[in-house]
Image 1 (spheres, rainbow, N blue to C red):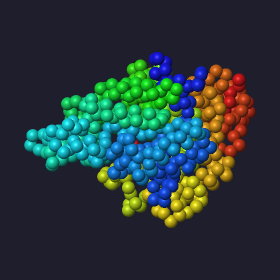
Image 2 (image 1 turned 180 degrees about the vertical axis):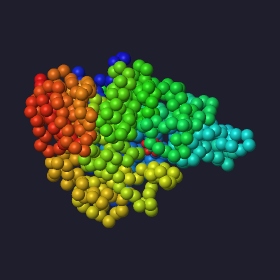
Image 3 (image 1 turned 90 degrees about the vertical axis):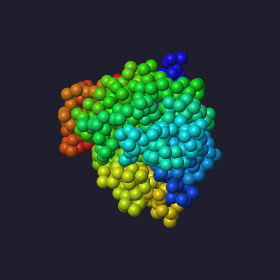
Length: 550
Ligand code: GLC
């Protein structure tokens, strides 16, 4: 029973469950494929592009929210947890997509947004109607401080105070994000039961798991104490303006939060017989003990608390190794790591690191120990697209001007082919966000023909990862004594042993190998070559995977 809980259900005999050995691919549904010529991607569009995912070689797709929503935060403001927004299609379209994915052996993970609803959700509509409403306590309502101040000093992630006054009932409600995203009161057992029912709804429909939005936010200090001022900033933190002026001690991650994830885990496990279901938590905590606490004391909470540490690590060998080693050391025994290099909230990896280093970053992502999540378009090396001010859509960017917090550049349409709209939407239709200028040249179609492309590299790495137990389930051991610009590590599973070496230098470097390799399995550069039996020369930003003697 305990073993089954830790694994999230059985995999085929002897093999790890899919969420450990597999690779997750994130689809931002507005931007993947439009099937009805309205300029916005949709569920039938995703279904039509599943061949790309199987040719790529990923195992699961995670679809960002497609629920009915006023789209103030593009679906992260949910008005109905058990429906499909017409802009994305219908419930039948979802069922068809799920069946088509399953038919190809792909798992489907959906986004679940439990911290807040839309202000248009019927619960909030009822809650704001009167102080006596039976659903009043579904949200966090408070009086202002005597003299008319806000209930406390908490700030919204998206700028400004986290409280909005509602004149109808003369109280403030809490919103950790937009005023149109009121926070649910997870201390109310009715809220817990109602939200768990929404999980049950999708589990019964057959989804393979959930990505839990801002999973660390659900439980706040019961006394709603003021946050203390902050003087230091975590090295991993993205600069967020006024929000950084406080230590976020009381507005999230109250220890009670772990009870909720134990309860959710029981639900997933109850549905997991024969079909392991997985939970992935979006947790922006960079104190590693706090983050790994979400695996659960008995690994009975979230299977994969998202590990965002690489996103903010300076791209240098020593720093990256430090990040990887620190996470490996922080993991509770038996907990399975995971790695992320991009998502719909972060500047694209090709823009952060440049096109050449993005290739070795991809090699690293797909060879480190743990489950990788790949953001759509990163397999093409898609870059951030400059958005003219009049086309800006993301509310964060518009509410906190001057800090480039807008997330539109990393959410632009996928590049499929050389046609007018790069195959994303019908000719003559304006996509909801502008396409990259090089969309046609850097499309799936064009890169599939080019053996040197990012797409070809990603496919080769995914195929190698699948075929080598060392890569998809083996141990991790960093190699000491490498030149300062090189991060190298061993992955081993029984007889299967590989060495991964990545250069972070802008010049060639030589690496002495600890033992005689039997061959080079992959490289970010064409024609990698050994320089004698124990020596390898790495070109600028080259990454290689080497097979060691068996
Ligand atoms: C998460 C999502 C982000 C969203 C926010 C509020 O961070 O990834 O896109 O805006 O939560 O729901």
